[in-house]
Image 1 (cartoon, rainbow, N blue to C red):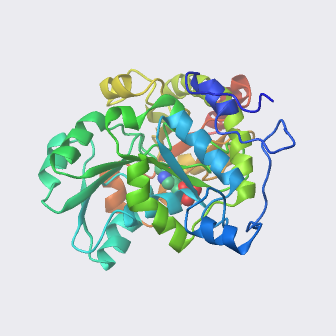
Image 2 (tube, rainbow, N blue to C red):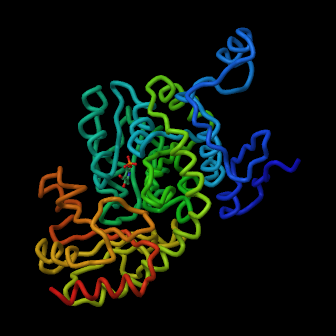
Image 3 (spheres, rainbow, N blue to C red):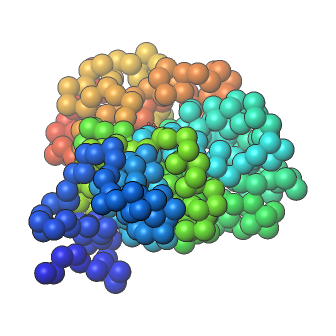
Length: 397
Ligand SMILES: Cc1ncc(COP(=O)(O)O)c(C=O)c1O
């Protein structure tokens, strides 16, 4: 029986459909959902061999599960990584990728523009366990180099950043990290695996919140850690096995189904975002539009060097500040107010009062998060309906 498709030499859209599929004896078309905590053995001897890793097979779904393994393998094939481990959320992936590598006395260098929960881990949680951190302006390569110390073990960034869509030179930062004997960890959520390949730029470990584009339909939380087999075995596998932030098999199944349409969704959302960014840039109510696909993006040269497209996220700043931002978002009828992103539904949020409300106003301004800024995750609706919704909202200001 022709059971699985060998995707090794096939392109990303094909890998997204067929990668990692393990068919059962029934030859099902769609990936099977193994909603089971555990597995049974033919004998006590077989159980002993399985636990001692003397024979292949599953033992307990906190360690590994066939549906989760299919998702991990599909992600690894898409990303070009040797190995992947799925987690319950994106934050579980970030926490494990950092905690798994670090011990008391180590040091982390990170860009200060980070998703709020990532900032909490670097700035508050790790120091409680004796891991110091230095935050730098991610666009300043000299600052990355100056922050390196002999005990720097890992360098961490996201690019494009949430929510200001700054883009950092991953290849140059990888060189700085490696020259100092550190690893580079990249949170590639905003770029998606389709628009940026951090491993080709020198990253040692890549993480995603699969809650975003990989599900892409607002259903499940999830995360994934990708790296070489050696990195996963040395830093990640045992940490996950013993601490337990496993992805549910049900969520892995939803993610597998999400991946089948990832390429179509991201490309259409990006096409919508390109048009919408240009429309927003013409409004007299808007002070600036930040979109990596526009020629006026502050790091345009880096975007062209390391991304194959501008993505589907747009940030823009209302001239009349918070009142205008709230008034516009409240007036929208198709675009919904929500803090998730990468969804097929268009979602708008006000970072300074939601995702980044824990920061002080001074910290927010340092990151460029003003009271007038809105973050827009462009969805899959007809772009003319989205433009009409925004124009109607802007007309009411
Ligand atoms: C850049 C970035 N990293 C990590 C996360 C965390 O993902 P999750 O909500 O799945 O834990 C998010 C979103 O919430 C994010 O935007």
